Structures are given as structure tokens and as C-alpha cells.
Image (cartoon, rainbow, N blue to C red; front, side, top):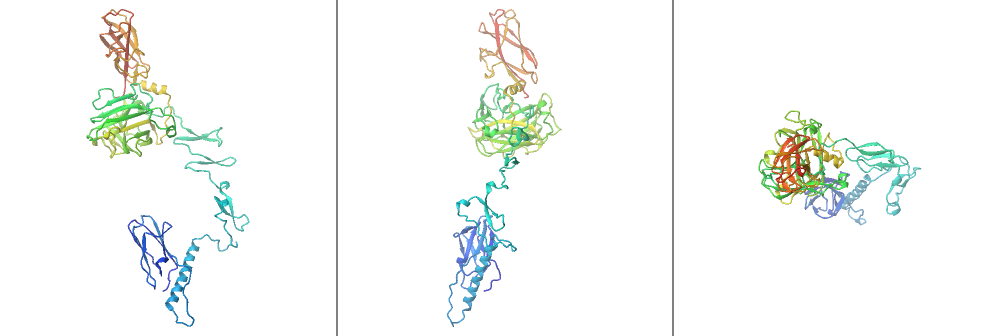
Length: 562
């Protein structure tokens, strides 16, 4: 038969469905058909259609279809031998001769196909036959091939000493040169490149320094004036919803019960870029796997209007480290204090109970609506752990209404012992999440004192009968039984607003002033004056009191942006 085509190869691309593939070139033997999957010779998993003595155009049929995208190459490879013999003076075997001519031509075609894929000298080259170095010689391992300087052949060179070798390894690296090529590794997010007289390259990456870059107060959960563990938090909890300073844990309608506590489970220095002391932890102790339309469980910081003002109507970035028992979509939200304007977004937890860094881009807040830019509630930053359907909003846009979560977000309350940990929360202007900026503890505490202050030592939670250390003291100045003794208590920091005062007896389970000398309580406490700078207590002396006897009282002043 004739050979009208000079090719001996055809390629197909698998689609995961097709099993039968054609080979449109004359073939005399099924053994001449070679099959390659992604350039690897394959010997099993397929059959070649039978070929009669006069030859045929075979097909290749796979038992299992090649996967989608797999490159299938079918080649005709004939042996470069000739086994026919012809008797002198015998009859002319036309079919045999023609077949042998075909096989010879096929062998030439496959040699040509190999030559077409080889590296060759140009047509005009006068270089004589040049041998390549022995690739099996270990002395040649890892070396490069180049044309000799005199143009007479090829030579080897050490790649590591080549002047064209780049030292760069990571996206963003910089190429520097002094006496030799060198790599300046890329910095971390938010760093800037500046001149450095001590760096070998003369350049160094440094963090951007801002006076107060974070509008979240106590974002690393260092300050806990009210205590460090809060069990049995539920929608029926009558006490304060604040735990770490400036942070609220809020449950609405849900039957879930949780313990909120300070935790030393934190990201590593290698992860966070700094040593982190604490995170806050929510641990589910009573589950709620049936979500009502208005139910919610959330962690909130209410940003005061004065602090929100610098962020209002500007693009923002929220960043934080999170560790959750639930993988999948979690929700965050930002809203005005009136809950009439809301923004919601989702973030994905990839691995359960693993610290992960997340950033949320927030478009500029609308000018319209009820916003407070002074000493009231400016905006609410919400981490949503459970959200009912009525509170699910459209992600990544500001919208009218009270929305706190995103479609498809997980319910952290669905299993007892689920946990959610959070730390290094940062809210800043702009589209770039910069590294969490270290703030001295005393500075963070000072900012927190604007909203909450107590008489107790820092590490003692406000409670009745907690001891006299730190209690305010006043000597009796009036006749026992008369309201004639006053105690004025100034605050260390002026409060955001007139605070709510809660009093505590240092030595008994009531809220009365205590006569420390007698070990007796007064019969009446009266907050006669309360202001942003302090308050005055008036009380009747305990029975049996005399002048100059010392009286004590603990107190808690709260001026939160509820």
C-alpha cells in the first residue's frame, strides 16, 4: 500500500470519558503500535484492534478512559530489520516487496521524527562532529553546557559560579550587589524599605510606626479587670456582659451556654511576629443546634465615636488571629450603634483548632444614617458565632438594617466542647493589613480606664467580701446613727460618661460601707454625687461607732458604650 503521510505519530487529549482513539497511519502489526500517557510508555490497560496481513489503520481502546487533560501519544515504531528472503529466479512476490518497502519507509519516518525533536547545529555551521560530555560521569553532575570560547565544540562550567545565576528565591526579593550578587529577602506586609548604615546591603525592611494605629482597644486581650474566667454565660445571664476590658460576649435568645476565659493558647512568635501573652476563649458547655431566626451569639467591641471618627467614610482593614473547632465560613460584621447600617463579611477557617491569620477589607462606611462621632457608641465590631436567618446579610456591602452574619456560616454552638479563640485584633484605615503594633501594658490599661475602673488590686475580680486591700478608707466624722460621714473617691482617668457605680463590702457579702475597727457594717449607703471625675459616698455609721474609726469600701465604675 502507499504511504501518503510522512508522520508516524498522533496525539490526543483525554477527557475522562473517551476510551477509543484512532491511529490514521498504515500499520502492519499490533506490536508496532506504542502508547504513551503524559510521555510515559504504557504497556497495559488498552488493546489495539486486529490488523490483517495487508495492513490497516488501527484503533486503541482503553479499559478505563484517560483522565481529563492527560496527553495521549500513539506512535508507530517498526523494527529496523528485514527478514524476507527472495529465491533466485523465483516468482516476483509483489505484495511482500511492497510491504518491505513500506516497512523500510516507516523506519525512515520514525528516524526522521526523532531527528525533528533533536538539538542540531545550524545549516551554516562549519563545526565538525562534536561529542557531548559523558552524562554518566559523576564529575559532570550539576554542571552546565556552553559553547567553547574558541567555537570548536562544547564545554562544561560550574553553574554556581556563573555570573548569570540569580540569588533570588522568593517573590518580592531584591537583587543587590557589592562584591558579589546577593539577595535581600522581601519584607513582611506593611514594612517599608529604608536606608541602613549597619546592614550589609545598605538597606533594611522596617515596620511602619504610627502613634495609635489600632482603633480596637485591648485587641491582644492583655487587660482583664473584671476577672479571667466567666462560666455559664447564657441569654439569661443577669450580670455584665463584659469580660476582657472593652469586649462583650452576648447571647440573644439562644439556648447555648458558654464559658468565656483568658487563655494562654496563642500564635507562636514565628506566626504572629511578636510574643503574644493571651487570647480570649469561648468554650461551649451547652449546645444549641436549632437556630431561631433572631438568635445570635457574638463577641463585640463597641468603638467609641471619637475613635470611630478617624475611620468613618474611609476604606478599612480588620485583621486578627483565630482558632476555631469548626472549619468553613465564619462571620464578622460592622454596624452603627443604632443597628440601622450594617456590613457583613465571611472568612474561612481551613484547619480545625489551628491558629490562622485573617484579614477583612471593609469599604467606606456611608455618610447617611445615624452615626455617633463623639463620646457615644460609634461602631460595633462583631464576631458572629451563631446567627439566625433574620440577621444574615449580603456579604461585602453596606446595607440598611441589622445584620450580623453571612450565608452559609457555621454554627459554633452545635457541639459541646467546641471552642473559638481570638487575639491580636486590629482595625485600621486603608486597604493594607499592617502588623499588630506592640502597645505597653500600662498604655492599654490607661485607655481601658476611661470605660472601667475599680478599687480592687488588678488581679482581683470585683466581688463582695474580697478583702481590704485597695479599699477606699474614711474616718468617721459624725455622730453614730446620723448621715454625716462622706467619702469622696476620685478616678484615675476621666470617664467617657457619668459611670454606673457598683459598691462592694470588703469583709461581708453586701454592698455596705464597712467599719474596719468594729467589724460592723453601716446601715445606709448613698451615692450623693457621681461625675466623670469621681463620686461621693455618704453613709450612716455602724451602731457602736465612734469618731476617727476607719471605714472601708470597694467599688467598680463602668462607663462603657453599651
